[in-house]
Amino acid sequence: MNELSKYAAGSATTAKENRNAAFETIFQAAANMIEETNRYTNEAEEAEIAFSLGLLDNTHDLQIAQQKANLALQFTVAVRNQVMEAYKEIMNLQF
Image 1 (cartoon, rainbow, N blue to C red):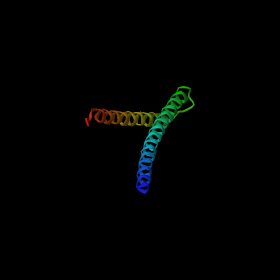
Image 2 (image 1 turned 90 degrees about the vertical axis):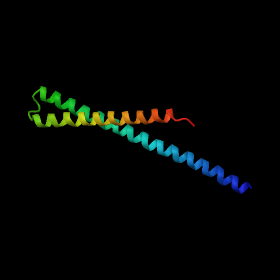
Image 3 (image 1 turned 180 degrees about the vertical axis):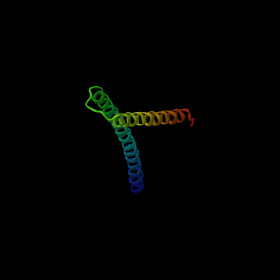
Image 4 (image 1 turned 120 degrees about the vertical axis):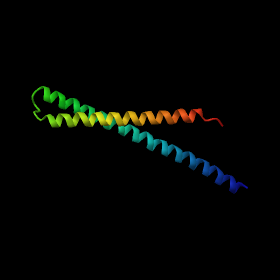
């Protein structure tokens, strides 16, 4: 009987560790997405300042930097909205 209880406790611990690892992976991916969006936004701001100061004369580079920042922000907001929607659905589940 002791043998079975060892396996049951071990499998519960493993399942909890797997859930923690999965959450950590998702959290790290979200943090990386936010960092990347922030980096694109900063690059766009630097390009705007450089263009305003006359250091950058190529408008295409400025527009590309702005578009990258815009798309990254839109993607980040869309992911956040989907996560919030999923969270609300989970909270509305009744057991």
